Length: 212
Image 1 (tube, rainbow, N blue to C red):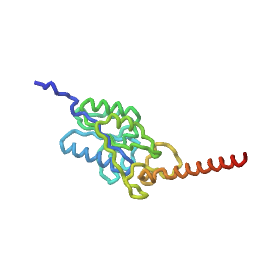
Image 2: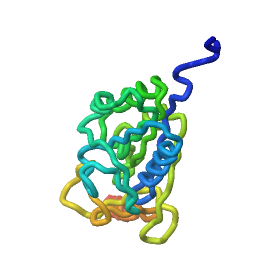
Image 3: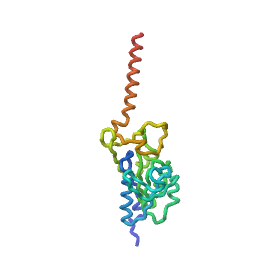
């Protein structure tokens, strides 16, 4: 007899691990995947095909932990390549997907699947990255982890992009392009520009008053 409290979706959930680059997001995703595998749960890992920094298919952390994964060009492919026996789905670099990934993740959770996502919560300007804001809102569990600031060694929650020829939000790279920064050392250059702009404005106002 089936219990009246039984639900086939009881174990469906959405977990998000987010933070700046070099904070260990992928490492944490791999740790959770391996624990699920030890529990003999069928796991599938997906990654955006655009992220081929370390390997064309495997998910690889900055500390060189690896896990076999399936690269996909879009979120819909996750549903198309999902096995009926899969109980855990892990998605790395989730910020690179468009908003359709939200519907895919929601559908997986409703099916009773545990979904583990890892990705950047902010881009190099400090703005929310891709579908992350909505994903954080719909998640059952959110873990925001920090890196170490390359300037002062304080906890870092920002990703700083070194000067480059492009202003595109998506620019795949590693330490050759990016650094983890604390809030103080993330936008100090912009603050200096603001201070310069205010000083020039104040100087112009003073000169204008002198001419009256």
